[in-house]
Every structure is written in structure tokens, then in C-alpha cells.
Image 1: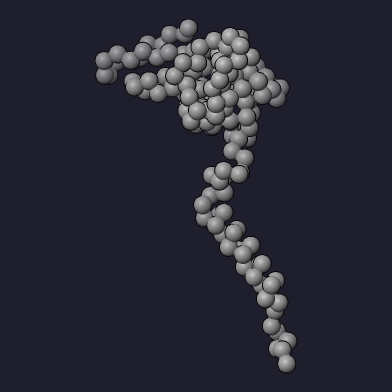
Image 2 (image 1 turned 135 degrees about the horizontal axis):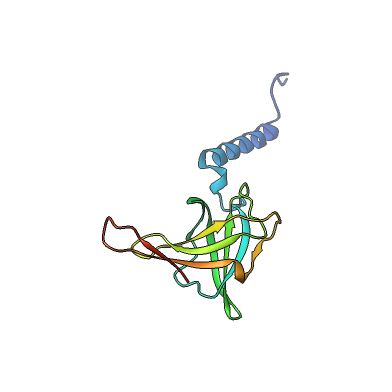
Length: 146
């Protein structure tokens, strides 16, 4: 005769597997998992995207908010695809610039959110290649817009 408090082993097993899966997701940080959406995708078009590559940072006001996901040719322009955290609003008048971060030439995208629309494509006139030339240690860099 079975005890009245014994449970169904199949139901207990499924519950245990689900519980372990939830614990694994939480312990590894579910936002870092490849199947979890990492951010909202955007496209920007540049006349010159030299030095930018997938994996470079995307910054808003100097704070990292995303990553560059791809660089490819689109006619006579370079199309740069990138993601931005979903809590950062990027409007339809936003500006994007390629910025040099280090003396060794590490590049990043600098996004300046503007406008009220919800565009995911930033057209060519809203771009600026910002090159920073570094001089001797301790001196301020000169910024040139091209």
C-alpha cells in the first residue's frame, strides 16, 4: 500500500529540472546568455568607417551602452550595425560619431540621442568621424572633425 504523502516521481523530476535551470540562469546572469536579447539593434551609415569593428563599444555620454555588431559596405557608404541597451532612448535626430579612445587607435561609437522618434536607422548626414590626435603625455588631445 502506497503512502498517502508520496508524490508523483515524474512531476517531482520535472519540477526539479525546472528549478535547477532557473538557478543556473540566475547564477550566470541571464542577461549575458546568447539567447537573451542584448539590446535594440540600430544601423548607421558612414562615408569612412575605418578602424571600427564588431565588438567595439557604443557610448552615450562616455558610458558604455552597447556593442558594434557588424560593419559592411552598402553601396558607396559603410553600414555599421550596433545595439544599444533597451532603456536608452535613441531618437530620430540622433548623431553618431566614430571616436578614437586610446593612443593605440581603439575606436568606439559615440551616440548623442536627439529627437523624439523611434528610428532604428541613422542616415548619413547625422554622422561625424571624430579623430583625436594624441600628443606628448600630459598634454590635452586636439580634436578634429572630418
